[in-house]
Picture: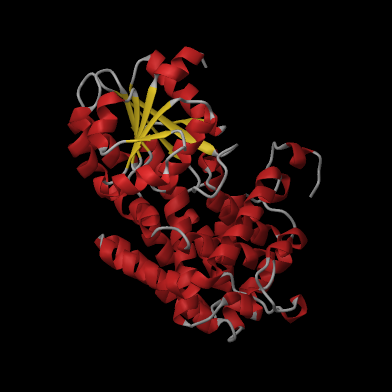
Length: 443
């Protein structure tokens, strides 16, 4: 990067939530001299004090950021993007570049087209990870909606400080893929958390939740509930494609649960097999697995239950996920270019279950005949239905209430769960196909 350019060019961030702050700090660390930031005007004085000496220039509001910045990133919640762009967009500097960090791009693009001056370039982005995951090597979607070559290349150079893997998509492609990967993954973990909370059950104290797959379920559920509710609500409720996937997931849970309680073994086994063959292929053994061995995943346990006390689990959440992919004709491996850490772990444990013949057989038998797990499955069925209905009616307040009530139940374990989750993500990332460690066979 030209040093003069780094000294003179001004970058602005409107919104200083966790992701906005992460971007701001990385830009300063990379040597950008003029990084302008703002949040709500009511937070101005507190931010000035808190960020003194940080290298960031704190301005009063989005008007001040927009008037002087050459590249502006809106880092606000998806449900607020239109209101915020409507307020600050008309103040955008002539010839500037504008983008956003929202996880749903259609409302964002509509707002930009409606409220930004015609001379403004639009290059928007989405880092497919949360603020506690290091951006190096993670996918970063770039959407060149309206921009000259030099402006687009400038955005690439600026965001190179994140050290992410750039994926170029249209906003419609982005929303379809994130619905296929993120929306359903989130609702599965949300449903598990709600089911455990309803039973007043900490899963790490229960023999059904011992082992590598269970560690992923528990730690990733804690990870989701330790974040802000709106991160997931926006993806679920504002992405036009998301409701379809979430509704089918809840329907798959319902269909499988009905077969389980009726003990219709042949129909249940056939449905599971058809779904597994569709998603993982009849020759799944030829594909390099995403996840590591159970023995490695056992390191990431919150459980105090000895492994020898482990009981079979039906894995209804995973069987239903694979079934829903089958019913919707979604081949999740085609979306690995836009994988999030959560999605990679989720498809990884589903793949792990379906590739292990004995484990899959044990899960099917537990689903059909083990009454010890039936209460858990019933609560999971109810929770998935509840979340799907909440999304279908588009009730943000109900979503927030459901989320925060469950989060309150688990909050004492958030710090440890997130720490272990970060370690797990790093191990999986270094063993993914194509990485140096995976090529050396250190599995």
